[in-house]
Amino acid sequence: MAETASLNIEDKTVELPIVVGSEGEKALDISKLRAETGYITLDQGYGNTGSCQSDITFIDGDKGILRYRGYAIEDLAANSTFIETAYLLIWGELPSEEPLKEFSALFSKHQMLREGIKHHFNLFPPNSPPMAVLSSVLNALSCYYPELMEIEDEETFTEASARIMSKVRTIAAYSYRQQLGHHIEYPHPKKKFAENFLHMMFSQPYNEFEPDPILVKALDLIFLLHADHEQNCSTSTVRMVGSSEANLFASVAAGVGALWGPLHGGANVAVVEMLERISAENLSVSDFVSQVKDKKAGIRLMGFGHRVYKNFDPRANIIKKSCEEVLAKLHIDDPMLDIAKELEAVALEDEYFIQRKLYPNVDFYSGVILRALGIPKEMFTVIFAIGRMPGWIAQWYEESKSTKISRPRQIYTGSVERTYQPIGERS
Ligand code: CMC
View (cartoon, rainbow, N blue to C red):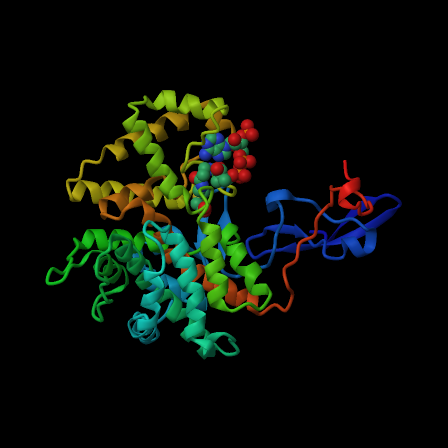
């Protein structure tokens, strides 16, 4: 393969180096283009722009492939756990027994919040969005751990990342309880990651919540499936913030903000609201799909479509299967699942969706499982954030090895130079 590509522009020919990834993905390195020609590239929404070279996650959207550090998501979903997968994402290899034990032990060690942090929760008004609370409290953690603001060695990084990953579920559960006006339930030293989260969400004094192991496994799977997804909106945000050498707490707090939107992590809430609306208004699925296609109403089929996947989202297949298993084993008959399945079937046969390569994404079925777990929809995107934390941390760490701040350019389209008019002379 050629090592460069030639670009003819005005009276110049420039050679653009070709960069090839380990899976054969190809890119043109345009970093010297402006210096050599005066041109920049323009790619609104970055659909065609590589922002970094990364060893962490590989996606082939046309083939529906997702791999963390080379391991297929299907393989990890069938055989691994969220914590082991988090280790893999952060450190690059699956751990042997001892390092995994040590890594898990760090989660127990750091799961408590300082008592002072509890006061932050009381200051949020009732009905505060849990994503706002999560982002604020994650940022506030940096005030409690000044020694972790600058990460100069692996040991400090391990401490900071274990603290964040462990505490994020404590923060999430506290915010839920505080909004309900319930007492705060401390993390349990003996419970594992997902079970401990459910304990903090739902245990009552003298009445410990003991979930069915199927539900615990399903939640662990949801965390695992969300653990990383290369350069999506929130991960790019985390890397962007981190590129200014901002600390890890501030960077992941910014990631929570980016994840919140309904086109990204907030889609899992939007899916359930869409299903509820179809049910409440007694709409037929085909009428709803017609509204979506009409576009005038500005309605999207939430949980469908993906910037990268143009065939299927492998996470959606795994989640759908898990959703059916959980509901069947627990004998839960959820009409939302029936509507979701019908919507999927109708959309997959419809030219509008076929032409645009729109398939169910990870959020299409995750809300139905989360409902079965008893998790209110306001918390769905928070669950996504808990799962995505190891990915953000791994990507932040990778970014921290580079010394280049991320700073895109633009094509300015505003007024050309004009002079200041005193207020009385303005028309
Ligand atoms: N329903 C109806 N039409 C859609 C949808 C949808 N869900 N998604 C895309 N389209 C149409 C869109 O109107 C456009 O049509 P046209 O070519 O006629 O203008 C075409 O498909 C391309 O859409 P786009 O907005 O240019 O595609 P994108 O790659 O920029 O957007 C997306 C990707 C995920 C934001 C979008 O598909 C969407 O809004 N989906 C619904 C929200 C959702 O489920 N988001 C979760 C994504 S997965 C979780 C995560 O990683 O965040």
